[in-house]
Every structure is written in structure tokens, then in C-alpha cells.
Length: 186
Image (cartoon, rainbow, N blue to C red; front, side, top):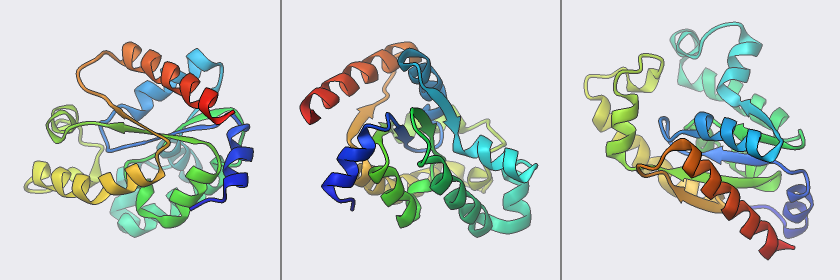
């Protein structure tokens, strides 16, 4: 997907990109990881809302998922060019091949992998998730997981099961794994 030299060069940018399903903890873990590593935390969904001046559910209502995905791709293309950030991407960011290439070529990609059951428990009462506003949100979540899981794995330098551990414990474990990863790459 990326050339080796490009990938090695951009690893020096210090960027860490979090991918995974909605409810996997990308924002929570990303904030903790950025704080631990002295990096700037950025959330692509928050950036989309800031640039558009409206909420993500509103974008879905007016422009549909296709319009949202165009905005998301534009934001990701801009954000990956920054240095020393921890970026929490939206759950569907990996659906766009250009996003996958941009992520894997511009930093280290961490896949926060959760079970469908855990994701369901974390998202079932959240009304700000337009894709789950269906007659059977659990079935929709399962379908999205089956489509996206291989794409997350494709771009990931590291897959981290989230399980039942605390956010702090997971962030510390990720920091240790990142240290090991950088030692093997240097």
C-alpha cells in the first residue's frame, strides 16, 4: 500500500493513527495516549464538525453518508500531514482506499479491536451515531464490523484487543507496544 521508504520516513513524524469501530475507545484512548507521549490529540469527527459548523448527524441528514465520507476524506488528507499527533479516526474512515493509504503512509496505525458485544454495550444508547439509527442497530453493527474488520487489519501496524481493561491500562499497554514496535523498526 505504501512504499517502504515513505513509511519509514513518515514514522519519524511521530504520528499515531487510531482505527476501529465506533465505540472501540479511539477518542478516550487517543487522549490518554497523546497525554502520555506528549503529542497533540486530534479527532477527525470533531474536526469535521468544527470545519462544517454542524453536527455529524446533521451532515448525514442533509448530505447522506456519501457527503459525510467526502468531508471525512478531505479532513484525513489534511490531518495526516501534521506531525506529532495522535489521531482518532471515524469508524468508517477505512472504507475509503485513499484514507487507508494516507494513514499507513503517514504514521503508525493502531487498530483498537473490540467484540461486537462490547461495541453494542458501549453504543446502544448513543443517539449521535447515525448509522445505528435503524430498526435493528445490533445487526447493523455486526454487518459493519464484518465489512470493516479486514480493512482495519490491512492498515494496522498493531492490533490491540480492547477487552475489559480500563482505558488507562490499555493506553499504558499501547505505549509499551509502541516502544517495542519502534525498537524493531530502528
